[in-house]
Amino acid sequence: MPLRIVCDDITKMRTDAIVNAANERLAMGGGVCGAIFAAAGAETLARACDAIGHCATGDAVITSGFALPVKHVIHAVGPVWQGGHACETDLLASCYYHSLRLAEENAITSIAFPLISAGIYGMPKEIALSVAIMQINRFLERSEMDVYLVLFDRADLSLADECRNRVDAECSKRNEV
Image (cartoon, rainbow, N blue to C red; front, side, top):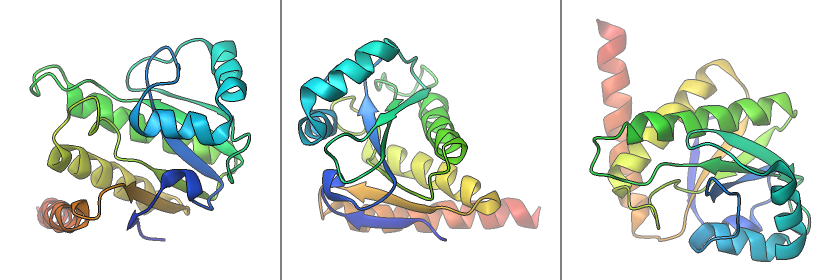
């Protein structure tokens, strides 16, 4: 299945799993993280995350979906944007890789991602979109899974199309060499 980019509320997605843009402490935060905690049942999800304790930037862990309409929540810790000089794109790529690997290991057949690190963590959306699209497409070249990239703002859909076209062109160029 190809990557599908949609504008929706990630807490309403009907997939096997959704991804939470988490912090290293796995604590309830703002933005998409706060919305996921609230929809899952904040106290219940907080207890599950407390039991795990920590997740390093660039990595991911998994919990139940609790009151969400999904079986699992994968908590991926993206980097805080520091101007692009602190390996932020590599760390973000690692988030997507580890999230998809966890999904595969847990027999998840459909997953929805938010745009990790592009909200409170300040990564420019164009960079975050390019990394997300590249990593998800790499995964889908070798694995079967329904993957959604869920954008909150409808205005971001055109930027996502531009990024997808640019990533596709870069991949085609590399394959020609």
